[in-house]
Image (cartoon, rainbow, N blue to C red; front, side, top):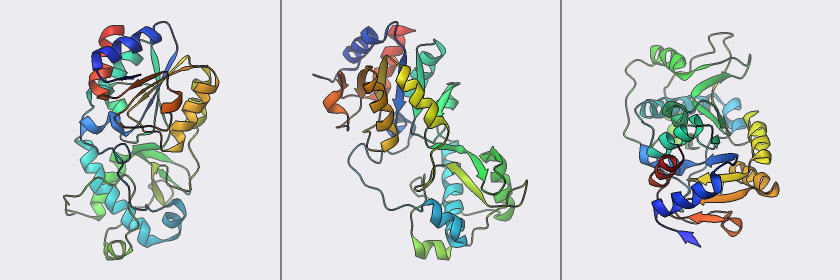
Length: 274
């Protein structure tokens, strides 16, 4: 049965979650109310992105990645948490859930969540590929702005990962700042295609093994990381609940399938449980 009313959905979720260890697995759909597009959830496609090997091997791609990252980071700074982020933070504060997210926008943390397993890294950090140092994106922004004063602002869609547009990349005059610690190559601390997943993936898999309820929120589970978490929880016998507009890769095994807004559903759930 598919539930399409947020209040009815919240009541069903509250019934299965009371007294149970719950792991929330979140995707782009929790951030759509914050102004970020859900690229996969509505059947859209993405252009090929610059992968890890391309970035490390070619200064042209490095300039282009950082130009698009810098333009996008400015947009991310203005974003505010959605009702879904706020509701999940309330549930976490009450000790009712853990959060594993495919998102890199940092909005769970901005909403007040304290322990979030970031499966794909975070847009709020950068990492040196030479010495391994990690530091806040805001600090690196100051270095980029010193090298690129008054950089033009473009009215473009956010570029979580820069697309492999070679003509635009070659035309870029953006200057990349070196690592302030060792002078090495700095990379956004988000997972590029072809790059190893962070240690938080292992922590999230362990949480999935121990949880009694797996709550998917705003993900079609097309991205393999989220599906791995779900499979682990399902194999351990957890009840699987999914909130998502449109089909998901785990619909056939879901115990509760909710096809309505993530924010109103989770807000009603937090009101019921907190």
